[in-house]
Amino acid sequence: MNIIKKYIVYLRDNPQGYWFKRKLYGWGWVPVRWQGWAVVAFFMLLVISDGVTMAESAKGGDPTETQLLWFFAQIIIAVAALIIICYWKGEKPRWQWGIPKEDNTDTKSL
Image (cartoon, rainbow, N blue to C red):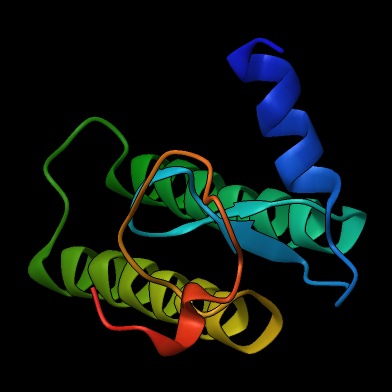
């Protein structure tokens, strides 16, 4: 079985109903249910709208210090909210390199 088919099987093996599963390589999550994808889409919408608002408020000039502060504050809040939701609705994160041979490694330290 090639790696793509194995990856799809890994993502679909979700009896706990997680919105996000661990990435196969590295540390982090990937959305696997429609709720996870909706969270990621909403996050992207927030970041893009924040950038568009920033560009419109600067209108041909440099943004003010207050505009920059508000822009970065919104980005930090959006990223923090995304991480919190991933922790809450996803698998426990850990470093992983490839498809796990067995999924009882949550209790083992790497």
